[in-house]
Length: 183
Image 1 (cartoon, rainbow, N blue to C red):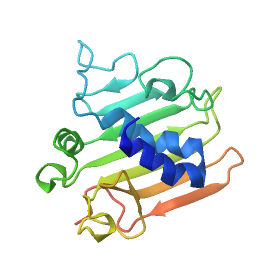
Image 2 (cartoon, helix red, strand yellow):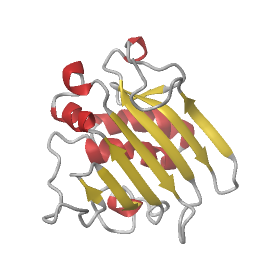
Image 3 (cartoon, rainbow, N blue to C red):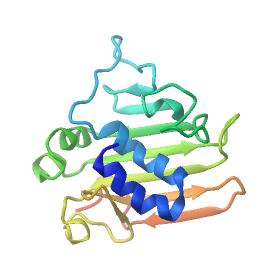
Image 4 (cartoon, one colour):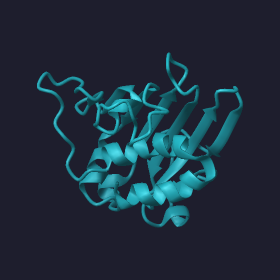
């Protein structure tokens, strides 16, 4: 795992446990590479669920870590859950150019839509929106009130979930929280 994943584990792991770590670090572990792998030869989804040309992951969470073993980062709890991740070109550009240059990173976003209400699933559902804010974090002109910092240069502007007992959680509710609506 990268340093970004480790720091995220410290922030979310203590407060919300592995589930939230797995959900929100999907973007980090799957997308924070200096080089993104090529999509399949046909230009569509690869065996894990990624379509890099369309900037989407869709499939069982088992594939997000790029190891099809019935586990997500070693834990089988959420492997059968359905995950959809989407990100924009600025996200790719930011990842390829050091995570902190507004020329490449301004406007970068990622979403994670987790559905554990499937056969063999965990029963959890969660929707997360992440935007780039730069290393200034809460002091950044891109910061949205109501979110929380992740990976040093990003902010979770929306994080809403429901557990298997149908209890709803709101861990971030930035205003505004639309993608592209920040400064």
